[in-house]
Length: 539
Image (cartoon, rainbow, N blue to C red; front, side, top):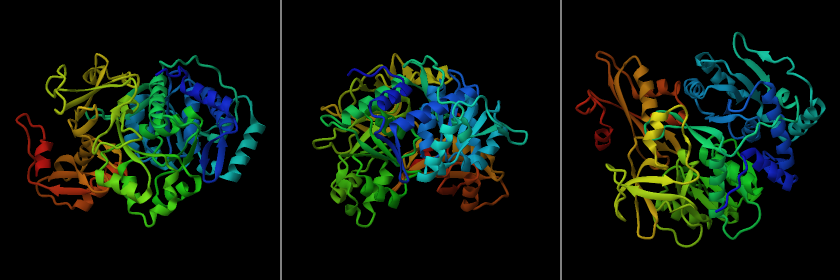
């Protein structure tokens, strides 16, 4: 394939120039055209430059799905910055870790999340500037008033009366930043520059920023679009029900839609009834989801009445898709549901089942165009195993990351001679289809979200009554996996499972909180004192 050499902001500029009146985003009945989106991206980029953002500075985004996320993402890139998207469900502790590691200069956050992120600010090595947005700006009437006020205030010189929190960072209003200018300075970005630091536990379990370039993300969007739209012309309509801060929706929904000039109907989060009504009203053509969403659809009353037949293809990723879930969904809706595979370090997609023909049961499909995949021996990564034999899946292709941010040693563990060693155990059949068997790493995937046992264990160890703790993932019919904690209490103390879970809820995003707590007198250990999670799973 021949891929565009555009940076991500150039991709948007190209689409906006070609189809300025086409609908880019739909949000609670408000439509935002590509021309309007391009204008607001330019305004935000100019505003960020007025805050002192230079090429290579890091800008963090922390908000649920909304137009401001899309504007902030492309605006920060156009200003020359590197984006690091932060989960809107993170606690202050989790956000502080990511922002310290990335060294963020500016945080753009939803105003309603400020009480949650405020405690993170004293934990940061340097105080970033804060831009607070308001979701209501993009409902129909407020959006029109916002555009009018921005037009009236364009090209004012300087920042007007930024508000400083008491002994804290400087806080700016979204409207103020967008009203400064509509013409950012060019920053000489190239496709080889880093666009995004996407945080993941990778194969070692500690949170790291995968350095994804403009070329990585543009190429992967092209690969996915080409695979799913072979032989079909015209723009697609997609639903952003997955969080845009997650690499799956970022690439396959947001960037892919901009690439082809499609429309995205934005939902703040997945909520079954709202999603069904969106499908019925807007007739989307592609839906990207995780298995838990399709489980919810399967159990919705009269799901067949919501017009799933408009969907050419439904994609499932983020976790293994049970065969019975796929079969029931297709029987109920008449839709086509296929499974794919990827990981953050690959931008993320590497494999997808063909959108036509008969799928192979349990397969993640075939490698995308220009993507090489091989199965290597678990103990000798230089030896490729025979067809049908299980081993570690390794990937090589234009979507593979540059490495981990400021972590050369950990980068060298997973990137060798251009191959990305995924830590996932898989096999390949005689037709070239791949099947995920297991994971070398201990990462837990619950509802499509990655959970790293070490993060949860560190919180458990902070509990004054806990002596030892270990966490594993256990099968869950709805979430795919869920978190189970094994704890040993301090001598002479007592605690309940509810008490332990409440302690975790104060310090972890909801999806990371253990749903089960087992009290034990001891935990199984290896000869060198490592907790044996496999032994806990066997229990």
